[in-house]
Length: 350
Ligand SMILES: NC(=O)c1ccc[n+]([C@@H]2O[C@H](COP(=O)([O-])OP(=O)(O)OC[C@H]3O[C@@H](n4cnc5c(N)ncnc54)[C@H](O)[C@@H]3O)[C@@H](O)[C@H]2O)c1
Image 1: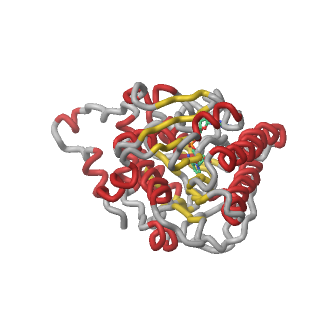
Image 2 (image 1 turned 60 degrees about the horizontal axis):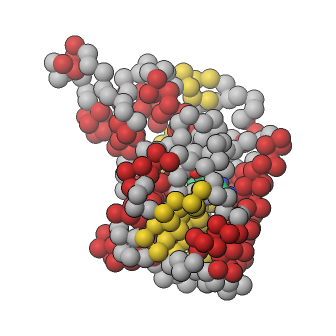
Image 3 (image 1 turned 120 degrees about the horizontal axis):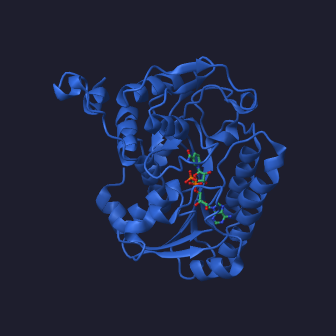
């Protein structure tokens, strides 16, 4: 395990670049790096279809350097990469779709821009540690659970194919001794600064957005599919560990929570916290069915052993904190006034 003090020592006064640093996970990482004393540069195109938003870093905007450009732009990348100690490469389109009409755009952002960016890294920061955030979606429908790093890759959508290609580019450049790359295959991540206004951001963004509107949650299929969501602070810690640790030949890690829950269980829990009506079970939408992977669970042992990382935040705590971060307040009812009804804090124990 890496202690908070060791993390502080690893990043204090280090020059770090965060691509996609205005997005959901990237901006949470930028806040953490700034708090650890790092000298942070953000490179983000603020693509309107992605989750980037300048307000995500507003409180520290005058203390980090922000460059708004595509990571494929050589001039901007060269400028950001000069003398950098660690690169956190989070820039990405994350929407999952089976629609070929959207594949070209995803290819441009997730493959072409990434390949150009990696060429810029090799040229302007040879040998630098690059932590790339890939996705569990590269594995497709699990052949077995929990999914370890030896599981075959069978992505079920275009985003998964492109993220796999970009992951492989990172690993290839490590094998060629051009970059010190590490690839993290992240499970579903949730928490403050999620882009709730965008479509196709996954079921948790959808659930939280509906909860904030006070609407009952829709659960597709029987709701028994397992998931192992990770609260964003835990995901950020995994990324920080991957940037700081001396690694051998193990270069890819599955990042997920050891605790799994069914989608229905998550919906019920969130509904209780947000005082919503029971979730509504609906047939799987025809458009989404082909890219559903069924149950997913991460084998966390490799990340635990090599990165010294485990997810700590429980689903109940993470959901309550996420809702609160978006301004949700427990409705005042006659029973809550009398202190009879379970508060979000009591729900957490359930
Ligand atoms: N959110 C999740 O549940 C999840 C799960 C698995 C993996 N991931 C991975 O984590 C990373 C971050 O995801 P997120 O949820 O924060 O997404 P996000 O959409 O909130 O942020 C991505 C950011 O990247 C920027 N960007 C996209 N393409 C770019 C390009 N070519 N050049 C410069 N900037 C570009 C966008 O403007 C945006 O700010 C991605 O690599 C994603 O694949 C996320």
